[in-house]
Length: 208
Image (tube, rainbow, N blue to C red; front, side, top):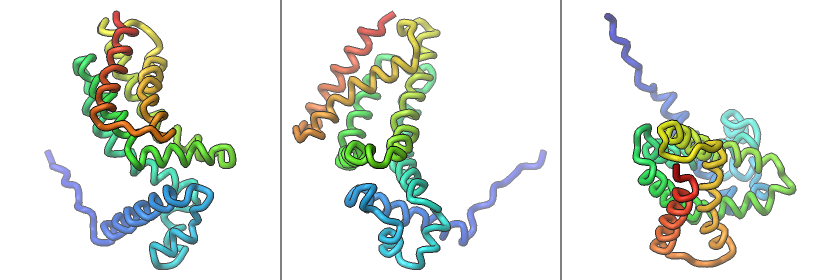
């Protein structure tokens, strides 16, 4: 049997990927610093260097660039979450790990700035609400729902709509972020304590 060996990316592909990563890093900072309305493709292109056409060849619109920034900002978290929600993982331990990690993610400095951006500008730019929802909250809820559905099938959680259960757990955890957006300071220890409490509430509510 012939073994198929994948070719390593060539220099040209590597340079393109490096350029793309540079664009996303600059765009993320500009979006968070200036907001969605204040961030322009021209300003991002100027900071990047080179022609405006280079930026447009990677991302034909500001909406697509914003979506790519969100994808890049959440990819590590999605990988972490996939590890937490492995099939067969202890439900109680997984829920507790999820709450701790999710609260840490959404209450990080960039997480708080991003949510402030969305909340302040979604009325004028409804598209960013949909872009954000489809690339951040929804994938998280879907991954949780798949895990909960398996747990319900195994009799480890009360039978309920798995996606509803996922939304309940996420909503419980977002209370920490909400207070921090309002200006309350919570230490890591305080956030971890609340994460454990939210996990307990959820597990009692959905106990079989």
